[in-house]
Image 1 (spheres, one colour):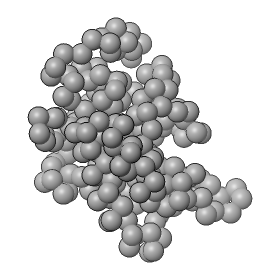
Image 2: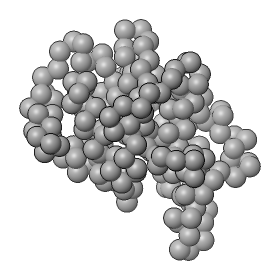
Image 3: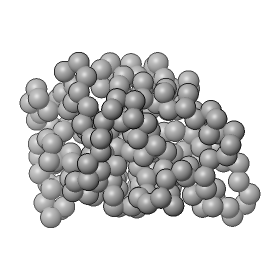
Image 4: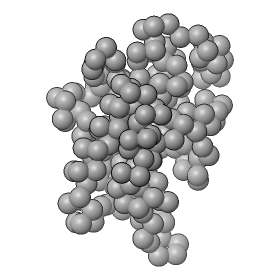
Length: 208
C-alpha cells in the first residue's frame, strides 16, 4: 500500500492547487504511552501538545496517529503525532501528506537533537537523519532528504554508553523550569513557518 502511496505522492508533489498550498502538515515525533510522555525524545509530541493547549485544540485518534486541526490567517495546520512509535514515523507522514494533498515543502517535522544545547532551536530545509531513527524512516518513506525539520536541542550531557538512557530519560528539574519559554518560542516558529515561509522563519528563529 505504501509503495503505491509513495508513487502517487511523487507524481503529484510537483503539482499543487491553491488549497493544497495553504495546508501544512506539522509532525511531532515521539513514542506513545505514559512511560515516554516526559522524556527528551518526545519533545515533538510535547511541542504539539503545548500548541494544542494554548489554542484550545483537541487531538483525535485517527489512522496512524493523533490529529488536531488549527486555522490561522487562511492557513490550515494539521498537527500530527504518529502512533506508530518513533522508528516507523515515516509511514504516518507519507499517509497524511497523501491523504490531505499537502506538498512536500509544507511539511515540518519536529524532533529532538543531541547536538544542540538544551532549548536551542534550528529550522532546516534538508539534511541527513543524523542517526535519528524517526528521521531515518521518514527519509526512506519519502525517498528524499529534502523536507523541513525543526530540531529542538536536548544537549548531550551523558556518560559514555548512556545515550539511550539519556534520550529516553525525563527532563531535569532545571530543564522543566525553562521548558515553557522554549515551548512558547517553538509554537511561534511553527506559526511563522506557515505564515512567513521557511526562509523567514529560519532567519528569525535559528539560534534563538
